[in-house]
Length: 123
Image (cartoon, helix red, strand yellow):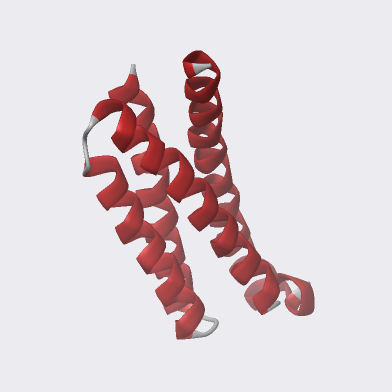
């Protein structure tokens, strides 16, 4: 049973890294497509995409990073992830534009770093 839980946590950490990367790509490409090409503004800038993405990031982050603390006893990955999630939430509140992009990319970079550190700490 313990091995199964560790496997699930590892998968969630890996999913967190992938979701972080997808979020950063969406953010950067969204700015490029809308600003430069004038394409996809209605879909790419839909607030629901950002709200759902943040909800997924919070869910995956709390479960995997929380289990990580229980497993290895280190709060660092959880703290880094929390700061990243805070930046991502700030991005949603800032409205569309450069500030949103910078906050989102910084936030997802921290969340991905937290998941990677969580994986390494548990090894």
